[in-house]
Length: 113
Length: 116
Image 1 (tube, helix red, strand yellow):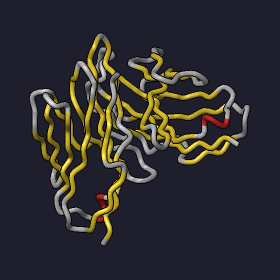
Image 2: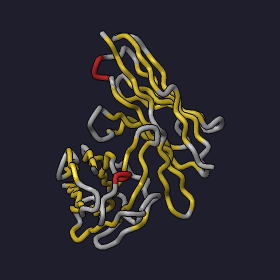
Image 3: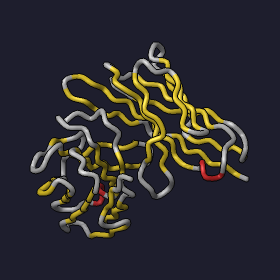
């Protein structure tokens, strides 16, 4: 079954600390993987897009990693800020005849001062 | 910057009413999508369109229909709203031609619909 699982479901950290969010998938055949950030009451905004051949991609303080062998991805946030408080959604694209986006349920991150 | 706008941020309707949710994008994108987002379930695709007057069912099309008469506008229609359609509705668009979904999707701010 094609699934995307994210953990933890929620996370609380103090401002300035680092954190890592996990995404495990069983999607096949794999095309690419995306991380989105969704602020409360807003639509998701893309952070990174990674293809099969990429294993690291950065966007400012956000760094995504991909291990296509173990079917795992992580999103590392460095020196967290209050504005990082949001839900982070992992999305895997399956390409087989037609493309299909499979969404994880997200990790809710809260950054406190 | 790509801009995807949705006609309402909040909407309250009664059971049985016909509901229209409008979405407009200003970047000449080929593909447009409608999702609903519910706690613990993630985003689920309702319908998408890869060209004017073309539509494809997503994972949960039951109880919904769509219309795309112009490239920039994609409407979601609830013919007879029910309480289980209370949800956050998100519209998205992407550039990719040919009906593929490999290009990045840009999302609107969402419409929170409550059906009483």
